[in-house]
Image 1: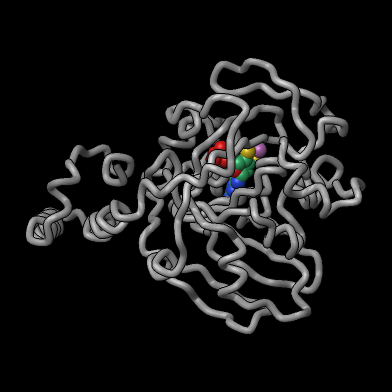
Image 2 (image 1 turned 60 degrees about the vertical axis):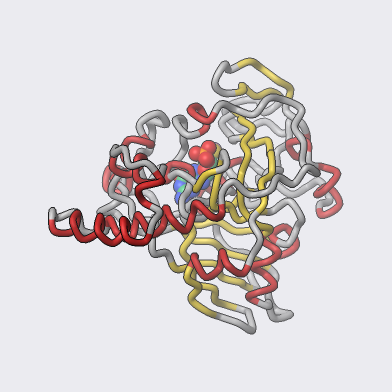
Length: 310
Ligand SMILES: Nc1nc2c(c(=O)[nH]1)N[C@H]1C(S)=C(S)[C@@H](COP(=O)(O)O)O[C@H]1N2
Ligand SMILES: [Mo]
């Protein structure tokens, strides 16, 4: 799948798996000038053992799962295209997701640079069905594969001073054409959560969707998913996670402070300055549904808030 997505080639998995075939193929293709394919094959081989992961049945939906073609073909990812959601998936071909390192730093006892393959051996992946609500009033429902952010917090072991977590996206203009198209944005994309929000049972670090490795357009190789908040909090392709004493700045709050707050909890009663948030259009058919407070996750998260956070 990874190969097909990245290169548009058809190589059945059975051909990529056996050790001998793998090395032969790699050498042949290298000789032909396809540098880096070995890494892709290795990534695909490792990934085939991780996906699909066991579904956690605790998280159920009140609506159908969004068709995969829609969730992977309609994306907000400004680094690839700042305006055309349908164009994003076709602009991802240069983006290298393997190998991948995540830097953990700040107010922690275990600052480190973590190789993603090593991290995925330490944690247990599971699948969860979550609703996903963009601040632009569209929504979807996706089977994400990942692990609770809480596991990463345990690995980092925050000091008492740590009160917030800051996340930063990859900064690779040569591989992310939207960054060059829209140089006025304060790249790289950055987001933040309060530490208790990051440790909430719902908060996931996601590496897969639809039982497969995450496509680049959805945030490969690793993104955040915070299902009770507007989608822009769910930052993609994370390279740095920093634990801080002070509340970090966030990308959309810096760009449009009047329109996007730090908390961004889904709230049908608080309109966006330019549109209502009372309803949402469900992709791909765009049927209208009522938006739920905390996107329907109040039972898990409402107790963290006074109701005045925005
Ligand atoms: N780095 C980065 N992360 C991002 C964005 C982005 O432009 N860049 N867009 C956000 C927004 S506005 C939404 S709605 C979701 C979209 O996720 P999806 O493409 O998987 O639906 O990603 C969020 N994470
Ligand atoms: Mo969004």
